[in-house]
Image (cartoon, rainbow, N blue to C red; front, top):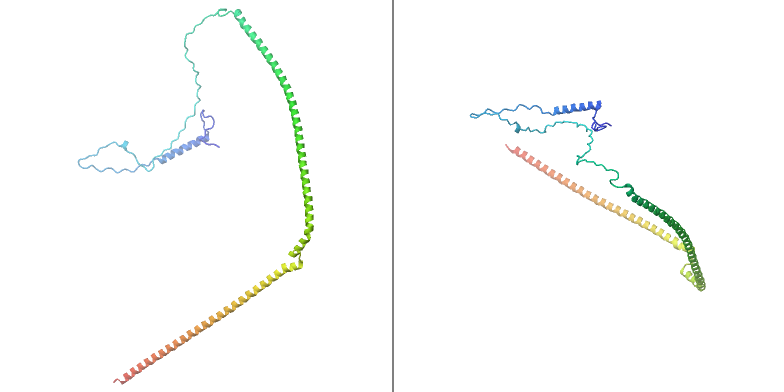
Length: 324
C-alpha cells in the first residue's frame, strides 16, 4: 500500500520522489491553484458616487482604506501547502577539554633518595611470607575441620536413619497391634449383640407361641362374626352387580323424566302457539269488521252527499224554470 503522505526510507536524508509521485504532486498543486483562483472574489459592481456638494461646501479626498473592512457572508479562504525540509545529520559534539591551570615543574629523584630497598623491603617480605604461611595453615586446618565435620555429619546421618527406621518399625508394629485389638473388640461386640438378639428372638417366639395357642380360636370366631370370612359370589353380587343395576335404573329413569319433561314443554309450546294464532285471528277479524263498517259509513255519507247535491241541482233547475 502506498500513501504519498507517508515518508519511506531514512527521514534524515533528502527525499527523492518517484516520477509518479512527482506527477501526482504537480497535479495536486494545479488543483490547489485552480481552487484558489475559483475562490477569488469577483469584481464588484461600480459603486454609486456621492451627490454634488451643496452651496457653500466642497468635497475633499480622504484616505480611509485602513479603516474599511469588506463584510461578506463567507470569508475568503485560500489553501496553501508547504513541505518542511528533511532533518540534517547532527554532528557529534566535541569533547570538552578544560583550560590548563598551574605551572609545570620537574625534578630528578636518584636511586636511594626515598628509601633503601635492601634495608626496608626485608621486614615487608617477612610480614608477607608470615601472613602467607599463616593463611595457608589456616586453610589446611579449615579443610581438616570441614572433613571432620563432614565425617561426623555422615555418622550422625547414619545413626539418625537407623533410629528413624527403628522408630517407623515400632510405630507400624504398634499400629498393627492397635488395629488387631480394635478388630477383636468389634468382633466381641458383634458376637454379644448377636447372642442377645438370638435370646430375645427365642423368648419372643416362646411367648408368642403360648399366647397365640389360646387366642387362635377366639380370633377366628371374631373375624367370622365381623364378616372377614364371606362368600365370594355373594360379595360380588352385593358389591358390584347391585350398585351397577341401581345406577343403570336411575340413569334410565332420569332419561324417561327428561323425555317426559321435553314432551310437556313441546305440548305447552304448541298450545301457546295455537292460542297466539287464535288471538291474532280474532284481532284480524275485528280489524276487518271495523274496516267494513268504516267503508259502509263512507259509502252512506257519499250517497247522502250525492242526494243532497242532486236535490240542490233540481231545486236550482226548478227555480230557473219558474223564473220569467
